[in-house]
Amino acid sequence: MTFDWSVIWDARWKLLEGVEVTIMLTVVTMVLAIPVGLTLTFLRLSRFRALRWPATAFVEFFRSTPLILQIYWVYYVLPVIADIRFSAIATALVGLVCNVAAFNAENFRAGIISIRPGQVNAGLALGMSQFQVMRDIVLPQATRRVLPSLASTWVSLFKDTSLVSVIAVADLSYVAFKLRADTYRILEVLTAMAVLYWLLGYPQAKLADWIHRRWKVVE
Image (tube, rainbow, N blue to C red):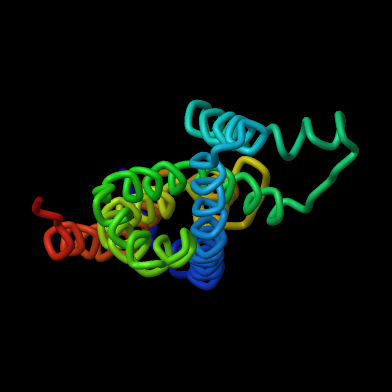
């Protein structure tokens, strides 16, 4: 067996462009999925069924179905049933944001309901409004408690962005698979792809581990 690593060097700029797209998808998705997830949390905690039930259905659907199916559905099915069409990159973001927001919603909900009711009652007894209690007492503590879960979600999201290659979004996976098809250098290309993902993902995983240790909640 002979190796020809020159194909990787010759395609280095294309691979780096794929890395940029992967990082962009990860960052933009999480930036959008945090407020969307928090909104879903408040809707799920609402006293009104008309708000609570749709939010619950949304969260459960996107948590219970494969991400790749959700991406396919937005890209192929939505244009048919609703005549709504997105570009490939927009489709990727819609699918990723909906999926990650659903998981973020559960993380935030768990963090909020973990706060002892006595603290809420104490705030109300002091004359604070429900909004002030949520903003000044509940959310700061809940945010600290969900940080480790959000960090883990971030690491998973970074890896899951590779699924958008199925709709020809030029992320690292798509560029690598196209290079493999063009050069027939399977071992070299897939090895280089694995190394790039590891170089990017390992520091994120270690940071997530540090956050788990640093922000571990001890009751």
